[in-house]
Image (cartoon, rainbow, N blue to C red; front, side, top):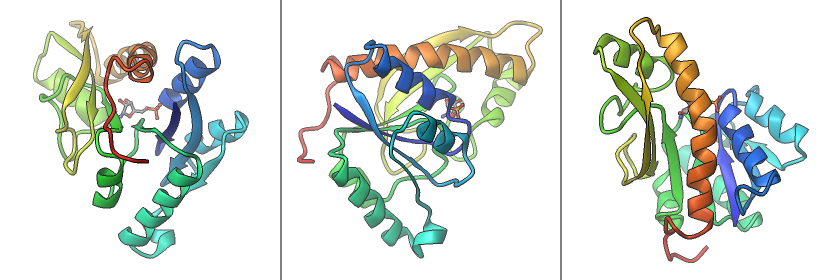
Length: 201
Ligand code: GRF
């Protein structure tokens, strides 16, 4: 299984996926990395690992349509079976969603449907969890559709919220768990326990 990982910033989730593939815990390969942010650590990590990587953005391409065409070309070039959004801060164009129907997944650092939707990313999520005095939070991996955080949930795991947590301490605990959980769930996708769409590549 050839995976394309899309990431905008730090890429620690990307690194966990790469490491999971390298150690054989995930029966797949990160074939390409795409980022909308030319300065992202995610691109740096891909380069360090000698994985092909692309900085593709609407600003550079000239329009959302052209960006989608460029992304689709890259995905075809690397014969991609599955797309994983690991901290990618953009919605995908409908042409990508259609071509890779049920083959695109996102990781979200909370127990969706709570604490999701537009604007709910990064520290905003953890701040909201703390302010709501939740006793637990977690991680959701879901299929991607045309709206933020609303596709079918394929896996969730819980993470405790401690009484003395700040958004920062909570974020760190969730992210650490993400790195293990990604391996478990992507391994399930690679082994067919979580089913991909039948659409042609
Ligand atoms: C993670 O919290 C993930 O849940 C969210 O974006 C963050 C990515 O972190 N979708 P990193 O850039 O991989 O370190």
